[in-house]
Image 1 (cartoon, rainbow, N blue to C red):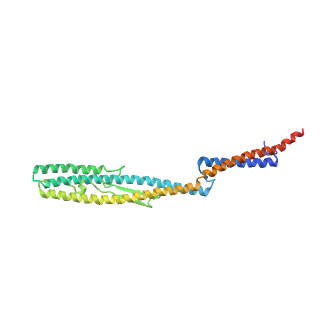
Image 2 (cartoon, rainbow, N blue to C red):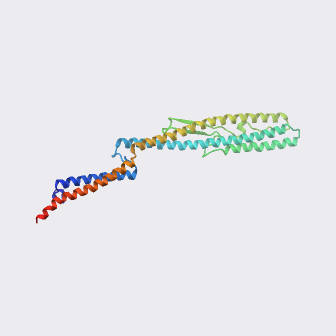
Image 3 (cartoon, rainbow, N blue to C red):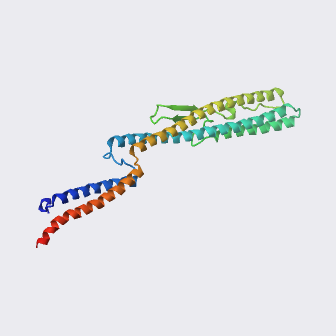
Length: 271
């Protein structure tokens, strides 16, 4: 049936139009209350929608970078743990060398040297076990960290080094019964400890940079998300009050429509 086939009074049409508009507003308010947002699609507010989308996308990209930074921190901590353990082993080895140097008993000296060789092997093994998820800074590995959401805008490269016994210069001199050989071994271990301290300081500096950028990134993500929320989130108190008012308006509109129809019904009383 075509709309023109039914004739309504002006009052009824006005009241019906008002009810339809109120129903649309109720639906919109219900959507806002359900989603918590006043801007759910680009049709609601194109400017705010796309600005919020850009902020959320950037926050998401930075969150990925933040996860990479967390992994980088663990990699550096793994290397630092390895350096601490290797330092302790070298200090133990120095104790053996000092003991060998302070005795003339060749059997004891040979025993100390044998224990030193065992520690030297452990140093190399420990260095190879200090990696984290495939990256080992103690076997000359390299760690690259991206800080910005755009690759290459801000980054840091942490260069590893070889921390095995041979690379550190912790080598066993044949026949510790010879005083000069033990003295050389002690000198080599002092040099290795100096290298480890320097490398540990470098790692600590890089770790400080990463953790600082990590905190900055976390704050930036929070700022971006708050900005996006400010553009799209609805005021629940306002929307709740709107819903009450719209429900009241619907009730009044229905009553008005009923009163408008009574004028047409009065014609029936003539028959």
